[in-house]
Image (cartoon, rainbow, N blue to C red; front, side):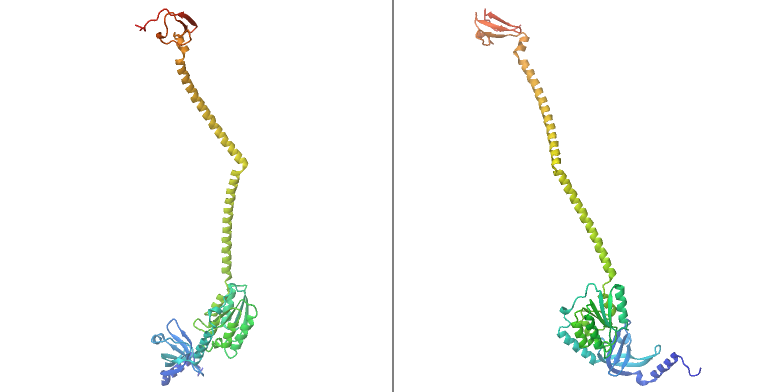
Amino acid sequence: MAGVYTVKQVNSYIKNMFKQDFLLNSVSVKGEISNCKYHTSGHIYFTLKDADAALSVIMFASQAARLSFKLKDGMSVVVSGRVDVFDAAGKYQLYANTVQQEGIGELYQKYEQLKQYYEDMGYFAKEYKRPLPAFTRKLGVVTSKTGAAVQDIMNISKRRNPYIQIVLYPAYVQGEHAKQSIVSGITRLDKMGLDCIIVGRGGGSIEDLWAFNEPEVVEAVFNASTPVISAVGHETDFTLTDFVADMRAPTPSAAAELAVTEVAAVENRIYEYERRLKQQMMYSLSAKRDYLERLKLQMEYLNPVNQIYDKRQRLMNIEDKLNMLIKRCAAENRNRLRLYASKLEGLSPLKKLDMGYGYIENSEGNRIVSAGQVSSDDEITVYLKDGSIRSKVIEVGEAWQKH
Protein backbone atom coordinates (compact mmCIF):
# COMPACT_ATOMS: atom_id res chain seq x y z
CA MET A 1 0.00 0.00 0.00
CA ALA A 2 1.44 3.34 -1.09
CA GLY A 3 2.29 5.85 1.67
CA VAL A 4 2.27 3.29 4.57
CA TYR A 5 5.41 3.14 6.75
CA THR A 6 6.55 1.08 9.62
CA VAL A 7 6.91 2.59 13.12
CA LYS A 8 10.68 2.21 12.88
CA GLN A 9 10.74 4.07 9.56
CA VAL A 10 8.81 6.98 11.04
CA ASN A 11 10.97 7.13 14.16
CA SER A 12 14.15 6.91 12.07
CA TYR A 13 12.94 9.76 9.84
CA ILE A 14 12.22 11.96 12.86
CA LYS A 15 15.60 11.03 14.38
CA ASN A 16 17.32 12.06 11.15
CA MET A 17 15.49 15.42 11.19
CA PHE A 18 16.74 16.04 14.75
CA LYS A 19 20.30 15.26 13.69
CA GLN A 20 20.13 17.73 10.82
CA ASP A 21 18.93 20.53 13.09
CA PHE A 22 22.03 22.52 14.08
CA LEU A 23 20.36 24.03 17.19
CA LEU A 24 19.32 20.65 18.62
CA ASN A 25 22.83 19.20 18.18
CA SER A 26 24.29 21.66 20.65
CA VAL A 27 21.87 23.24 23.07
CA SER A 28 21.95 24.48 26.70
CA VAL A 29 18.72 24.26 28.69
CA LYS A 30 18.05 25.84 32.09
CA GLY A 31 15.63 24.27 34.54
CA GLU A 32 15.05 22.49 37.84
CA ILE A 33 16.02 18.86 38.37
CA SER A 34 13.18 16.52 39.28
CA ASN A 35 12.83 12.76 39.67
CA CYS A 36 16.61 12.25 39.59
CA LYS A 37 17.73 8.62 39.49
CA TYR A 38 21.28 7.21 39.57
CA HIS A 39 21.38 3.87 37.75
CA THR A 40 23.70 1.05 38.82
CA SER A 41 25.38 1.33 35.41
CA GLY A 42 26.49 4.88 36.28
CA HIS A 43 23.97 6.63 33.99
CA ILE A 44 21.86 9.42 35.45
CA TYR A 45 18.22 9.91 34.50
CA PHE A 46 16.27 13.02 35.49
CA THR A 47 13.64 15.48 34.35
CA LEU A 48 14.47 19.11 33.65
CA LYS A 49 11.46 21.32 34.24
CA ASP A 50 10.28 24.85 34.60
CA ALA A 51 6.89 26.32 35.39
CA ASP A 52 5.40 25.36 32.02
CA ALA A 53 7.07 22.23 30.69
CA ALA A 54 9.37 19.28 31.35
CA LEU A 55 12.13 17.58 29.37
CA SER A 56 13.61 14.11 29.91
CA VAL A 57 17.38 14.05 30.29
CA ILE A 58 19.93 11.23 30.28
CA MET A 59 23.59 11.60 31.17
CA PHE A 60 25.75 8.61 30.34
CA ALA A 61 28.26 7.24 32.83
CA SER A 62 31.28 8.60 30.95
CA GLN A 63 29.97 12.18 31.24
CA ALA A 64 28.51 11.64 34.74
CA ALA A 65 31.94 10.61 36.05
CA ARG A 66 33.21 14.14 35.33
CA LEU A 67 30.61 15.81 37.56
CA SER A 68 32.07 17.55 40.63
CA PHE A 69 28.78 17.44 42.56
CA LYS A 70 25.81 15.12 43.03
CA LEU A 71 22.59 15.90 41.23
CA LYS A 72 19.55 16.23 43.48
CA ASP A 73 15.88 17.00 43.06
CA GLY A 74 15.12 20.72 43.27
CA MET A 75 18.56 21.77 42.02
CA SER A 76 18.57 24.58 39.43
CA VAL A 77 21.02 23.74 36.64
CA VAL A 78 22.04 24.48 33.06
CA VAL A 79 22.35 21.27 31.04
CA SER A 80 24.35 21.30 27.79
CA GLY A 81 24.07 18.56 25.20
CA ARG A 82 22.06 17.43 22.23
CA VAL A 83 18.41 16.64 21.74
CA ASP A 84 17.91 13.32 20.00
CA VAL A 85 15.27 10.68 19.44
CA PHE A 86 15.34 7.26 21.10
CA ASP A 87 13.73 5.61 18.10
CA ALA A 88 13.01 2.28 19.86
CA ALA A 89 10.50 4.11 22.07
CA GLY A 90 9.66 7.05 19.83
CA LYS A 91 10.78 9.42 22.59
CA TYR A 92 12.98 12.46 22.32
CA GLN A 93 15.24 13.50 25.19
CA LEU A 94 18.22 15.63 26.02
CA TYR A 95 21.53 13.75 26.07
CA ALA A 96 23.60 15.74 28.55
CA ASN A 97 27.32 16.36 28.17
CA THR A 98 27.75 18.83 31.04
CA VAL A 99 25.67 20.09 33.95
CA GLN A 100 26.34 23.39 35.66
CA GLN A 101 24.72 24.19 39.00
CA GLU A 102 22.90 27.50 39.27
CA GLY A 103 21.07 27.22 42.55
CA ILE A 104 18.13 25.61 44.32
CA GLY A 105 14.78 25.44 42.61
CA GLU A 106 11.76 27.24 44.00
CA LEU A 107 9.92 24.10 45.10
CA TYR A 108 13.00 22.57 46.67
CA GLN A 109 13.75 25.83 48.45
CA LYS A 110 10.23 25.83 49.86
CA TYR A 111 10.75 22.22 50.98
CA GLU A 112 13.94 23.16 52.83
CA GLN A 113 12.25 26.12 54.50
CA LEU A 114 9.31 23.99 55.70
CA LYS A 115 11.68 21.26 56.88
CA GLN A 116 13.70 23.76 58.92
CA TYR A 117 10.54 25.29 60.38
CA TYR A 118 9.09 21.98 61.59
CA GLU A 119 12.46 20.82 62.85
CA ASP A 120 12.75 24.02 64.91
CA MET A 121 9.22 23.42 66.22
CA GLY A 122 10.29 19.98 67.46
CA TYR A 123 7.98 17.99 65.18
CA PHE A 124 10.79 15.60 64.28
CA ALA A 125 11.97 15.00 67.86
CA LYS A 126 12.36 11.39 69.04
CA GLU A 127 10.33 12.16 72.14
CA TYR A 128 7.18 12.35 70.01
CA LYS A 129 7.80 9.07 68.17
CA ARG A 130 5.36 6.35 69.23
CA PRO A 131 6.43 2.71 69.11
CA LEU A 132 4.74 0.42 66.63
CA PRO A 133 2.51 -2.29 68.14
CA ALA A 134 4.12 -5.68 68.64
CA PHE A 135 1.20 -7.35 66.85
CA THR A 136 -1.02 -5.39 64.48
CA ARG A 137 -4.56 -6.73 64.16
CA LYS A 138 -6.16 -3.75 62.41
CA LEU A 139 -4.14 -1.82 59.85
CA GLY A 140 -5.20 1.45 58.23
CA VAL A 141 -3.89 2.50 54.81
CA VAL A 142 -4.15 5.97 53.27
CA THR A 143 -3.12 5.81 49.62
CA SER A 144 -4.50 5.69 46.10
CA LYS A 145 -6.86 2.79 45.51
CA THR A 146 -5.50 2.18 42.00
CA GLY A 147 -1.73 2.49 42.47
CA ALA A 148 0.82 -0.26 42.87
CA ALA A 149 1.46 0.85 46.47
CA VAL A 150 -1.89 -0.40 47.80
CA GLN A 151 -1.46 -3.75 46.06
CA ASP A 152 2.02 -4.18 47.52
CA ILE A 153 0.76 -3.33 51.01
CA MET A 154 -2.24 -5.66 50.72
CA ASN A 155 -0.28 -8.59 49.30
CA ILE A 156 2.58 -8.41 51.78
CA SER A 157 0.29 -7.81 54.78
CA LYS A 158 -1.93 -10.79 53.92
CA ARG A 159 1.07 -12.98 53.26
CA ARG A 160 2.61 -12.13 56.62
CA ASN A 161 -0.68 -12.32 58.53
CA PRO A 162 -3.71 -13.87 56.79
CA TYR A 163 -5.94 -12.82 59.72
CA ILE A 164 -5.16 -9.09 59.62
CA GLN A 165 -7.96 -6.60 59.03
CA ILE A 166 -7.01 -3.84 56.56
CA VAL A 167 -9.03 -0.63 56.36
CA LEU A 168 -8.27 1.30 53.16
CA TYR A 169 -9.03 4.99 52.78
CA PRO A 170 -8.76 5.70 49.03
CA ALA A 171 -7.13 9.10 48.85
CA TYR A 172 -5.83 11.38 46.13
CA VAL A 173 -2.04 11.36 46.43
CA GLN A 174 -1.28 13.89 43.71
CA GLY A 175 -2.87 17.09 42.48
CA GLU A 176 -4.80 19.95 44.02
CA HIS A 177 -7.20 17.75 46.01
CA ALA A 178 -4.49 15.46 47.40
CA LYS A 179 -3.68 17.54 50.46
CA GLN A 180 -7.20 17.54 51.90
CA SER A 181 -7.85 13.97 50.85
CA ILE A 182 -4.79 12.67 52.74
CA VAL A 183 -5.68 14.72 55.84
CA SER A 184 -9.25 13.36 55.78
CA GLY A 185 -7.95 9.81 55.50
CA ILE A 186 -5.57 10.15 58.45
CA THR A 187 -8.23 11.85 60.60
CA ARG A 188 -10.92 9.30 59.76
CA LEU A 189 -8.74 6.23 60.37
CA ASP A 190 -7.30 7.72 63.56
CA LYS A 191 -10.79 7.65 65.11
CA MET A 192 -11.38 3.96 64.30
CA GLY A 193 -9.14 2.52 67.02
CA LEU A 194 -6.69 0.90 64.61
CA ASP A 195 -3.30 -0.43 65.68
CA CYS A 196 -1.28 1.32 62.98
CA ILE A 197 -1.71 3.54 59.89
CA ILE A 198 0.38 3.52 56.71
CA VAL A 199 0.39 6.75 54.70
CA GLY A 200 2.10 6.65 51.33
CA ARG A 201 2.30 6.25 47.61
CA GLY A 202 4.72 5.17 44.88
CA GLY A 203 7.68 7.15 43.62
CA GLY A 204 7.66 10.30 41.56
CA SER A 205 9.12 13.75 41.15
CA ILE A 206 9.16 16.36 43.89
CA GLU A 207 5.99 17.80 42.35
CA ASP A 208 4.29 14.40 42.39
CA LEU A 209 5.14 13.91 46.07
CA TRP A 210 4.47 17.50 47.15
CA ALA A 211 1.16 16.72 48.85
CA PHE A 212 3.14 14.93 51.56
CA ASN A 213 5.09 18.13 52.24
CA GLU A 214 1.99 20.25 52.83
CA PRO A 215 1.67 21.71 56.37
CA GLU A 216 -1.86 20.32 56.76
CA VAL A 217 -0.62 16.76 56.13
CA VAL A 218 2.35 17.24 58.44
CA GLU A 219 0.04 18.49 61.22
CA ALA A 220 -2.39 15.58 60.71
CA VAL A 221 0.39 13.00 61.01
CA PHE A 222 1.87 14.73 64.07
CA ASN A 223 -1.49 15.00 65.88
CA ALA A 224 -2.64 11.43 65.16
CA SER A 225 -2.94 9.27 68.27
CA THR A 226 -2.38 6.11 66.20
CA PRO A 227 1.22 5.26 65.21
CA VAL A 228 1.86 6.34 61.63
CA ILE A 229 4.31 4.84 59.13
CA SER A 230 5.27 7.06 56.21
CA ALA A 231 5.95 5.19 52.96
CA VAL A 232 6.23 7.86 50.29
CA GLY A 233 8.11 7.21 47.06
CA HIS A 234 11.26 5.20 46.75
CA GLU A 235 14.19 4.79 49.10
CA THR A 236 15.86 7.99 47.88
CA ASP A 237 12.69 10.10 48.14
CA PHE A 238 12.20 12.10 51.34
CA THR A 239 9.16 14.17 52.29
CA LEU A 240 8.26 16.06 55.47
CA THR A 241 5.80 13.28 56.29
CA ASP A 242 8.77 10.90 56.52
CA PHE A 243 10.38 13.04 59.22
CA VAL A 244 7.26 13.68 61.31
CA ALA A 245 5.87 10.13 61.15
CA ASP A 246 6.58 7.66 63.92
CA MET A 247 8.55 5.56 61.45
CA ARG A 248 9.70 6.02 57.88
CA ALA A 249 9.70 3.12 55.42
CA PRO A 250 11.72 3.35 52.20
CA THR A 251 8.86 1.85 50.17
CA PRO A 252 5.20 0.86 50.69
CA SER A 253 6.28 -2.80 50.65
CA ALA A 254 8.75 -2.13 53.44
CA ALA A 255 6.03 -0.31 55.38
CA ALA A 256 3.84 -3.42 55.30
CA GLU A 257 6.72 -5.53 56.58
CA LEU A 258 7.32 -3.06 59.42
CA ALA A 259 3.67 -2.79 60.38
CA VAL A 260 2.58 -6.43 60.12
CA THR A 261 4.18 -9.12 62.22
CA GLU A 262 4.78 -12.38 60.40
CA VAL A 263 2.41 -14.94 61.90
CA ALA A 264 4.65 -17.86 60.98
CA ALA A 265 7.51 -16.32 62.96
CA VAL A 266 5.19 -15.78 65.95
CA GLU A 267 3.98 -19.37 65.74
CA ASN A 268 7.55 -20.64 65.55
CA ARG A 269 8.42 -18.53 68.57
CA ILE A 270 5.40 -19.92 70.45
CA TYR A 271 6.41 -23.49 69.52
CA GLU A 272 9.92 -22.77 70.74
CA TYR A 273 8.54 -21.36 74.01
CA GLU A 274 6.34 -24.45 74.34
CA ARG A 275 9.31 -26.75 73.73
CA ARG A 276 11.46 -24.90 76.25
CA LEU A 277 8.59 -24.83 78.76
CA LYS A 278 8.08 -28.58 78.45
CA GLN A 279 11.79 -29.19 78.72
CA GLN A 280 12.03 -27.00 81.81
CA MET A 281 8.93 -28.63 83.29
CA MET A 282 10.38 -32.12 82.75
CA TYR A 283 13.65 -31.01 84.26
CA SER A 284 11.83 -29.50 87.26
CA LEU A 285 9.69 -32.63 87.70
CA SER A 286 12.77 -34.83 87.53
CA ALA A 287 14.56 -32.66 90.09
CA LYS A 288 11.53 -32.70 92.40
CA ARG A 289 11.20 -36.45 91.99
CA ASP A 290 14.84 -36.94 92.94
CA TYR A 291 14.35 -34.62 95.88
CA LEU A 292 11.32 -36.60 97.04
CA GLU A 293 13.27 -39.84 96.70
CA ARG A 294 15.98 -38.40 98.91
CA LEU A 295 13.35 -37.30 101.44
CA LYS A 296 11.82 -40.76 101.31
CA LEU A 297 15.16 -42.35 102.04
CA GLN A 298 15.71 -39.92 104.89
CA MET A 299 12.26 -40.67 106.29
CA GLU A 300 12.93 -44.37 106.05
CA TYR A 301 16.22 -43.89 107.81
CA LEU A 302 14.66 -41.70 110.52
CA ASN A 303 11.60 -43.95 110.94
CA PRO A 304 11.35 -45.02 114.66
CA VAL A 305 10.82 -48.65 113.68
CA ASN A 306 13.91 -48.54 111.51
CA GLN A 307 15.75 -46.76 114.29
CA ILE A 308 14.73 -49.54 116.73
CA TYR A 309 15.83 -52.19 114.23
CA ASP A 310 19.05 -50.33 113.69
CA LYS A 311 19.70 -49.92 117.44
CA ARG A 312 18.77 -53.56 118.02
CA GLN A 313 21.17 -54.65 115.33
CA ARG A 314 23.89 -52.49 116.84
CA LEU A 315 23.18 -53.97 120.29
CA MET A 316 23.36 -57.46 118.83
CA ASN A 317 26.67 -56.60 117.24
CA ILE A 318 27.92 -55.19 120.54
CA GLU A 319 26.62 -58.32 122.33
CA ASP A 320 28.48 -60.54 119.89
CA LYS A 321 31.62 -58.50 120.41
CA LEU A 322 31.19 -58.70 124.21
CA ASN A 323 30.66 -62.48 124.07
CA MET A 324 33.73 -62.83 121.93
CA LEU A 325 35.71 -60.64 124.33
CA ILE A 326 34.40 -62.60 127.36
CA LYS A 327 35.29 -65.90 125.75
CA ARG A 328 38.68 -64.63 124.77
CA CYS A 329 39.32 -63.18 128.25
CA ALA A 330 38.08 -66.42 129.89
CA ALA A 331 40.31 -68.49 127.68
CA GLU A 332 43.28 -66.27 128.41
CA ASN A 333 42.55 -66.35 132.17
CA ARG A 334 42.02 -70.09 132.08
CA ASN A 335 45.40 -70.55 130.50
CA ARG A 336 46.90 -68.19 133.01
CA LEU A 337 45.26 -70.15 135.87
CA ARG A 338 46.67 -73.35 134.46
CA LEU A 339 50.10 -71.82 134.51
CA TYR A 340 49.63 -70.55 138.07
CA ALA A 341 48.20 -73.89 139.18
CA SER A 342 51.17 -75.65 137.66
CA LYS A 343 53.52 -73.31 139.45
CA LEU A 344 51.60 -73.68 142.71
CA GLU A 345 51.60 -77.44 142.39
CA GLY A 346 55.36 -77.33 142.04
CA LEU A 347 55.59 -75.29 145.21
CA SER A 348 52.93 -77.20 147.19
CA PRO A 349 54.17 -78.79 150.47
CA LEU A 350 51.92 -81.77 149.88
CA LYS A 351 53.73 -82.38 146.65
CA LYS A 352 56.96 -82.37 148.52
CA LEU A 353 55.53 -84.79 151.05
CA ASP A 354 54.57 -87.11 148.20
CA MET A 355 58.18 -87.07 147.18
CA GLY A 356 59.29 -88.33 150.62
CA TYR A 357 59.96 -85.08 152.36
CA GLY A 358 58.48 -84.12 155.77
CA TYR A 359 57.42 -81.06 157.60
CA ILE A 360 58.88 -80.58 161.14
CA GLU A 361 57.54 -78.43 163.93
CA ASN A 362 58.77 -77.95 167.50
CA SER A 363 56.59 -78.36 170.51
CA GLU A 364 55.36 -74.82 170.12
CA GLY A 365 54.20 -75.42 166.57
CA ASN A 366 56.96 -73.41 164.89
CA ARG A 367 58.48 -74.74 161.70
CA ILE A 368 61.97 -76.13 161.97
CA VAL A 369 64.16 -75.57 158.96
CA SER A 370 67.57 -75.64 160.55
CA ALA A 371 69.35 -78.00 163.00
CA GLY A 372 70.25 -75.02 165.05
CA GLN A 373 66.63 -74.55 166.05
CA VAL A 374 66.52 -77.69 168.23
CA SER A 375 68.49 -79.20 171.02
CA SER A 376 68.79 -82.65 172.54
CA ASP A 377 65.69 -83.91 174.30
CA ASP A 378 63.47 -81.36 172.44
CA GLU A 379 60.19 -82.77 171.33
CA ILE A 380 59.41 -82.41 167.63
CA THR A 381 56.59 -83.49 165.39
CA VAL A 382 57.31 -84.79 161.88
CA TYR A 383 54.47 -84.57 159.35
CA LEU A 384 54.58 -87.10 156.53
CA LYS A 385 52.37 -87.94 153.63
CA ASP A 386 50.14 -90.29 155.50
CA GLY A 387 50.45 -89.05 159.15
CA SER A 388 52.68 -87.50 161.79
CA ILE A 389 55.36 -88.76 164.16
CA ARG A 390 56.10 -87.34 167.56
CA SER A 391 59.65 -87.84 168.62
CA LYS A 392 62.42 -86.54 170.86
CA VAL A 393 65.76 -85.26 169.63
CA ILE A 394 68.50 -87.52 170.69
CA GLU A 395 71.37 -85.65 169.13
CA VAL A 396 71.93 -82.62 166.96
CA GLY A 397 74.67 -83.26 164.37
CA GLU A 398 76.48 -81.19 161.76
CA ALA A 399 75.38 -80.86 158.16
CA TRP A 400 76.07 -83.85 156.01
CA GLN A 401 76.75 -84.36 152.43
CA LYS A 402 75.81 -87.32 150.28
CA HIS A 403 78.77 -89.04 148.89
